[in-house]
Image (cartoon, rainbow, N blue to C red; front, side, top):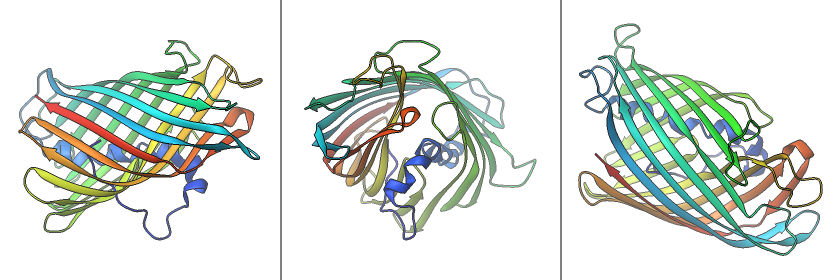
Amino acid sequence: MHHPASPLPSGTTPPRAAFRLLPGALALALSLLAPRLAAQPSGPGGPPQGFALDSVTTAYSYSSKSDVERNGKLGSVAIGQFEFATSFALPAPATWRLSSELYWSRNDLDLTGPVPLPEKLERFGLGLVALKDLSSEIGPGWTAFARLSPSFSSDDGTVSGDSFSLFGLAALGKKVSPTLSWQAGLVGMTRGDIKVLPMIGLRWGFAPDWELSVGFPRTGVSYKVTEALRLNAGVQVQGGTYYLSHAPAAGLGHTYLDYREFRAGVGAEYQFTKSFSAVLDGGTTLDRRFDYYDRSFKLDGKSAAYGQLSVQYKF
């Protein structure tokens, strides 16, 4: 939530054409964590770790009401999302960093008219992360990064085989200099119509106090105004894939809904203390899509304004 974002570079796949790539693209930002994790005192190459609570993060975002269409207007929808996550450092040897994360999110859909969508989408799960310093195996600056995330996503918050999904990624990264690092690898998932995708990420401090991050779910630039204040601008992705046990319309029960929202906006991150920070951003949705991909049934949403506030406490 705290990485800045920037406009899509020239030549990037247009939003509507990119929707089929989004489930895998969500993994790209995870690879961007590698250089930041490696920089922590307890990261690879540091002293052995023990179990410890690392951080708690909570967020709320709201996308305003906009039209939903399928061969004409069906109605409108506004979306509010709550998120909560807590992360833990796990015991690890000197050249490793291991961590875990418990997370929960809920989307509340405010529907107007006969829009065939559920009123709620909920997800909870576990993330397991491993980062390995490969300086002795390959050379200085090299790291390996992996994440495995089992979760349950549905319209009613139930635990079942249908709502279960598994997401994983594996990547290699290189810290080229103090201001430039990149990562590349593969991501796989059990839900969605694309199961395996390549991934790549880049982080570049191209000028004093300026930084560019390329990847998903955020791509953007940021500027450090002071030690406490950072401004950012760019694009991000919101959404996920959910199992629907209740049919919002005839023929749309016991299937999967892929919800995606492209957002473009500006924001600010403020570090109140060494442990406590907050991020506030807002802008517009470039594209909103609801895809029952197993039923070949898609709904297009018009642009809407959005706002988001997140706070984090690090222990």
